[in-house]
Image 1 (tube, rainbow, N blue to C red):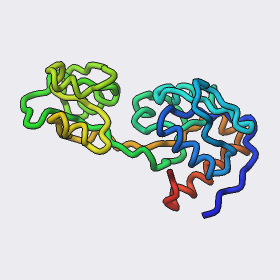
Image 2 (image 1 turned 90 degrees about the horizontal axis):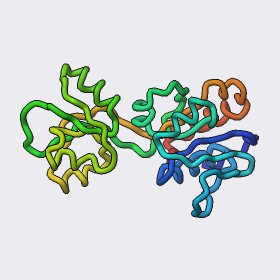
Image 3 (image 1 turned 90 degrees about the vertical axis):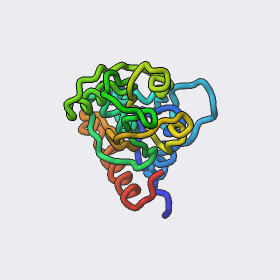
Length: 215
């Protein structure tokens, strides 16, 4: 497939998460017609890419910047978006960075769940409530798996991609809380005020992902 022609996007501000998803988002958005490029490695956090402002953020901050209108649109994992509870428009599943949020325990662990640790306390509480479980939820960051291994928690709810980390630590998935992938998110006011920029972008991204040409 030939690259899409660039369209006028000057004045658009995008919020993209750091790391691998930043590179994949730049690649896909470029193929959708935005004049973006991978910047040289530096400590810069804001880039002017041919009139498009790109903000490089922590994953968890992308929904906040888009919801409050500092960014017109952004790319974020479905798991982070759901945990944030932010009211942003989510028009396209970009179909990369696929993973699942799962309930994890030590292999062979039995007994009730008294305490569950997670970076996703909101989603964890919802999951437990749906199953009539009243376990205490502890919010942690970093290596969540250690909560199981040290006895801090009876289970953890965390992201799983390959499962290799679980296997290396005698842990196993007991249930899938939700499946996740990268999503385009759009500020609802910007969708009205900058529709001549955002509508073509949404349409082109839908074409690319439906044709199996996502990142």
